[in-house]
Length: 139
Image 1 (tube, one colour):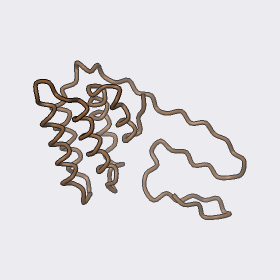
Image 2 (cartoon, one colour):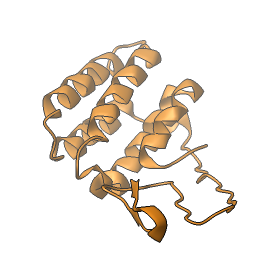
Image 3 (tube, one colour):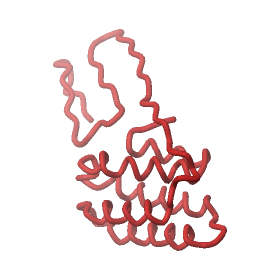
Image 4 (tube, helix red, strand yellow):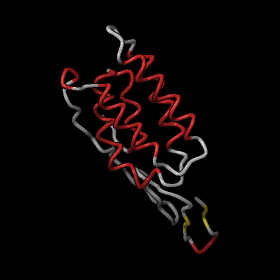
């Protein structure tokens, strides 16, 4: 984002989900985050959510596609264990989303990706609710 000087116009290079832009002098603003209700963790099937998330992110226009694939493969492998380490799954999902959000067309996929991230955040637990911010959600 750049400010074009005294004319107070603002030019955004990509998306600005969950952001405010205010021009002028001595302005004040308050912004409330989008609150979301998560599904019950016991209703989430992480293997299915991860597979669907992988399919969505595979379509992104990014040179990091391989990194996204590997991160989600790690998450899927751990999630299918009898007693999965949710922090390991969360770390892998966070890594995949970190690469994905750099894609030029990630903003076009947010609406489809958000339900998967909501479900996974619920299943992963409160330590991983921070991944909701990647898709413009908060709890």
